[in-house]
Length: 469
Ligand code: ARG
Image (cartoon, rainbow, N blue to C red):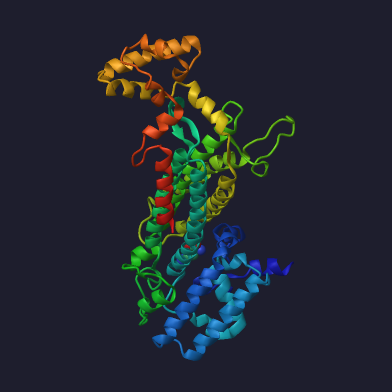
């Protein structure tokens, strides 16, 4: 029998809670109920929380200073063991918390057993997840800001580039490519706001709730909260050990972020197709086909679009996990970790891919221009022109409709007709009509806050850069 197997079959009396049990846990049940396989990623935050807890216990006189120092030294040693790959995680010790505590006691002896005074794994795990998520939120916020900055640079570069704007995926009116990219940017601004808002509710400390009702020791929760950088301790012990709203909020932020990245992805996939051919994605973000030598597939956007499904799924998992739980802690809550961890990993990967890829996008301005012309995208401009000459809007709409029908029959855009041809439909049309029928005239005319005119795009980029700092 290997050492690992032996340690996995520790008898119930070797378990920290083994006192009241008369037979060992069923081997399958042990594996079935263990979380150490996935919650070991919390080791760093578990140890940080324990050091703060021991520091507080010494401050209020529950531990001596010497015991505190021994515990802290021991925990640091455990951390070194984990980071050096010397730590053998044991399934029989169920989770990260009991594994670390057992190893602490192996290292420093009986004092190790005092660490768990005045707390429970229920408030401990809730604290660990919050510490973990707070750190991940800060990393994610930075990566999101990197993507936002890249989008602003690209939008500025493409402020004058004209493309067709779409409704119903039919050519509608010309817009600048920079303006389109700033629409993406706005979605990310809301995501970044939501993330920071979520962080406020992540950053409160449940420790001290103990199993559910609080503890009989004279703990100082404000001190522990301060040591751990929490904004404050939570208010109610029952809520503290059972609340996973913060994880649901995070997953909801993530699902919406992924929904946005998925929408961007859909457009990138369309734009790289031979049918649109609006942009070029550098080869390093694409892959080929094993059978069709000509293929260059936009795998990164496709995969991001695909990963949206699992992130949305994790949100539903957590909502469903919580919906029927009575107060306070239930073992169900152990199921919060894998969806949360996978959400964190997935959005970090997607954000990195996007932040690297966006600045590398090359617009094919000539193709965008041809497409913008092809769809009579300045038809509304002609109607507005007629209205400004005194024609009622409904009549103007009719006149332009007839002009477009003529253009369709002749395979010519409005700007390619002669003045005489246009005047067949209305005699108020003059030579100045060509100022509004060009693509440049059309985008430049939408020169107000939030409009597509190139100078509005540049102004919006400047405002956004200032806000992003
Ligand atoms: N591994 C557990 C979890 O992830 C830790 C808390 C267990 N508490 C208990 N009383 N069984 O939620």
